[in-house]
Amino acid sequence: MTVRSYLTSTKAKTSFRAHRLHRRAIVGLISAVFIIPFHGAAVAAEAPRFAISVENGWDLKQCSVVKVTARLTTPLADESQHIAAIEVRSGAIDGGSAKLPGKRGVFEGYVYLSHPPGDYAVSVISSGVATGSTPIRITAMAQGAERRQFPYAVDPDISTEEPAIPGGPVEVSVADEAPDPQEKYVTVTSEAFVRPVNLEFNGRHYIGRGRVRDDAKPGKYTMQLTSHFGCGEAMSQRGDGALEGLTVISSSGQKARALSSWVLGAFAAGGIAALISGLSFVKWRRSRISV
Image (cartoon, rainbow, N blue to C red; front, side, top):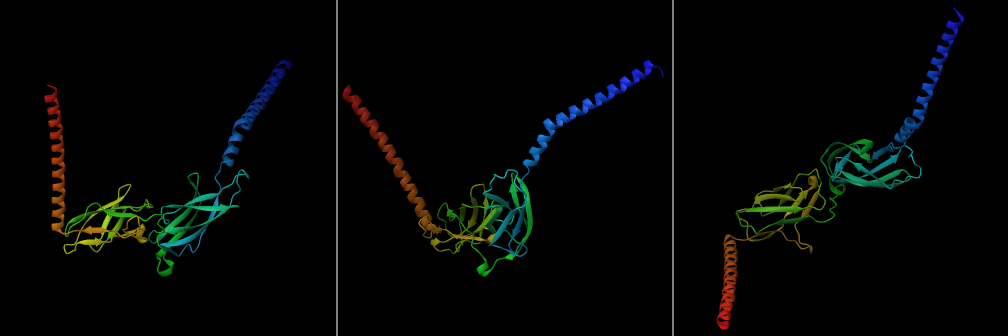
């Protein structure tokens, strides 16, 4: 090998090595500036994890109250961050979810189970993601002292639009202040009805149509609502707490009401006509006087 070819070969190898080292340096710099901070941010933003326990979780009862505990199992990215409460969701919980207050990473609370027997899961939801879950099982409907009445925040309004007559149709509506979004139908019963009336949820109220018994006597009949999958019961009542349910009147009474309404309407129409005539007469008299 000549001196010239040796120098040329050595120079090429040196240049290649320098180029490779330079490229590694650039890649390392880009990683340090962009990739590593983003990776750290992703780690820091990771939702905290929880371990959940449900009292008697494999032998729960419908229409009962149960204690739920959630413990934080991962350290918070920011030690100064404080979680005052968490949300737990389950198909067994009335309304689908509940808030658990807590401190120092332990969250506890009581939830109402209104859904029928079956297998469910209780999950902690953080930023829309389940960050902890445990299975539970509802085995039967609660009985006796174990059964808890559904805790209505406000008594539901159970009403009918018009008085009904024996054998006639009746429309029933219920305005529930705490509806379960998964419950599409509720039931209203009364001694005046031929059979229980099923009401369907229309987005704001439960509405349904039923029929009054042919032998129902005129008077007031209470109506009873059964909702929240059999756990909630309420009676029709006025705002002052007095019972006021379905009003049934006789067929003759309905005719009398209709006649009375017609007469009042006729008198009202006649009064308006008389008023118009009187005003026209006054206007005519004034015009004659001015002439």
